[in-house]
Length: 257
Ligand code: SAM
Ligand code: CA
Image (cartoon, rainbow, N blue to C red):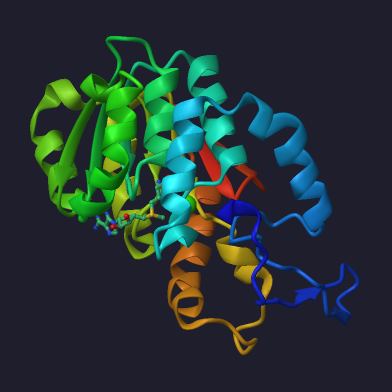
């Protein structure tokens, strides 16, 4: 259960009154920003793992053995996505950033038999690790996987007016330095009333750290892009938003016009 394995890394947070306080915040495999590991474990043990579909459990366990398992969607976020998709009745969906396919499987299991997922990732090898589980679950027919960078695929989609305003749900979980480039295009592709979910918008809690605070290199590199995205989404009149502290932070954007 990699999702519950604590790492040695700690981060610092500010107290509400501005004083600095060292908060023991183990990353729980980068999967939760809750300040209490016990509370997070409680959520997993009580509400998530007992209800996790068998194929998702199997895929989670396969992914846990992969060296980049830090990238996977956590089980509680997978459950959240699955429920959200059912709540909004999503049928035509898109995912940017597949890795081994945990969020993809959560989506595929939530949408109807004739639902579709246009899934993009620059790496097919990792997708193929999870593919046998997705096939066994009987949902592979819903997935159109495209290997390569997502941006050109979006531009291609935009060339056909039939694709405009056609997606019910889009999950973005890939290169954070491109999120605003994605947003520019996705806002045209999602339908009015549809939802785009941008993942990792709290970026390991780094969004509230001072610029000179110690951070791992990749956290520091993408931090500015995440900060810029969060500001841009909050100021975008075309969407209604809610930024949730699920996983590493997910911002849900409903296209309003
Ligand atoms: N949603 C996945 C899951 O549930 O396991 C996790 C995705 S992982 C955090 C990010 C993925 O984005 C990686 O698999 C990476 O190969 C992919 N990626 C990076 N740059 C990309 C790009 N320009 N276009 C498409 N995918 C990209
Ligand atoms: Ca993510």
